[in-house]
Length: 231
Image (cartoon, rainbow, N blue to C red; front, side):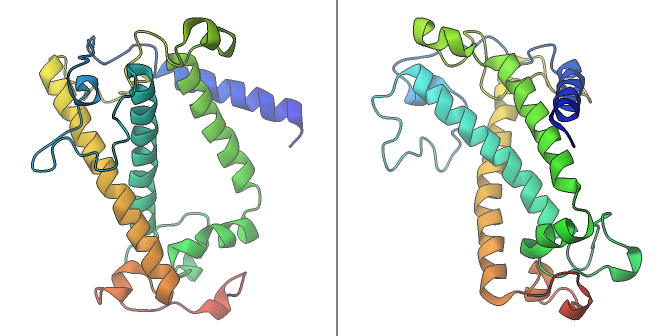
């Protein structure tokens, strides 16, 4: 794929993504300098204001917003990653890039290697899609690079962390309290997913067994000799 075609595809995909992100969904947020993390939602009992290493202490609101943006994006990726690991292994085994008669391709930590062997163009397409989504996020919430030093702001002043306006099913509530509660749930699920994904990867690196197989909930049908790449 040449550069011009890749750039055109990236811009087209970003335009499509922008169609879902034309309206900010978050209510107007007023930071509270006396509250933990300036009052941003995300704390829930019994953990509460969890910051044992003091990363949030003494930080200005702009820095806290950067921390929260990073946490939220990592949580979203981890939720997709954890779900992807579970549905591509025994007993569900949904991985459309492979032929139906070769369903079990083993632990998910090796799947991308097999994807490269079977569908080498997949990563270029994936890279373009991810780049387009990130470009849309930058255009939605981030200050233009040339204006960062002058304004001192990485994000646009009215941008609420993570709010790119993507809500095709209309699930976002209009009531501010309900919206912040939903935002907190997303953060908590993302935090759990980051821990869960890390745990699943560690387990598969230790013994090479699929998650449900290792738990005794699925049959081990994995035959490495049938794969394009051997480990």
